[in-house]
Amino acid sequence: MVPTLLIVDDSRTVRTLARQACLTQGWHLLEAVDVPQGLKSAERVPVDLILLDTTLRGLEITEALRAFRSHARTESTPIVLLAPSLGQGHVPPLARAQAQALLAKPFSRSDLDRTLSHWLMRPGASAPAPAVHSFAPVPSRSA
Image 1 (tube, rainbow, N blue to C red):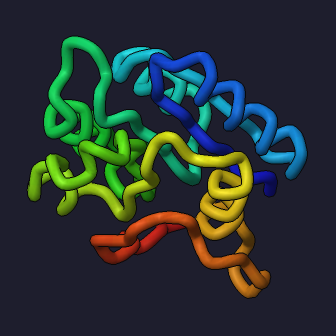
Image 2 (cartoon, helix red, strand yellow):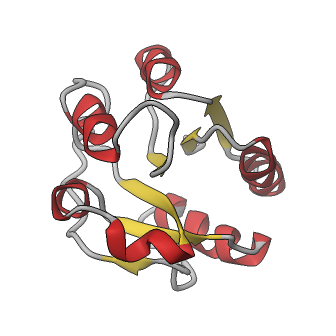
C-alpha cells in the first residue's frame, strides 16, 4: 500500500515542497491549511504521517495536537512538528510529548526527503536518517 502524508501548514511554499517530495516518491499527499481541514482529510483517507506547522494562525500548537490526538483516525499517527529554527526551544513540553519529532524551518528539500523517507518507508526497507530532532517514541501502529 502506498503511504499517505498529511501536511497541515498555511505556507504554500512548504506545501509545495511536500507535494514535490511525494510526487518523486509516489506517495499520496493530503494538504490542509488548518487543523479542521486536516481532520476532515484524515477522516476520509487514513494517513501514515502528519507534518504539522507549529505556528498556525489562531491556534496554539498544543490545541492542534490535542485535536489530532483525540481524533480516532489520527490518535496514534506519527506527527513531525514543523517549527521555525529560532522557535524550536519554544515548543511546549506538552507538544513535545504528543509528537515524535521536529523539523526546523527553513529546511531544504533534501532534509524533507530524508525525513519523509525515514517515516514513510515500509518496514524492513533501508531508510536514511531523518533530518529531525526526535523527542518521543513512535507510537505503536495498529493495522
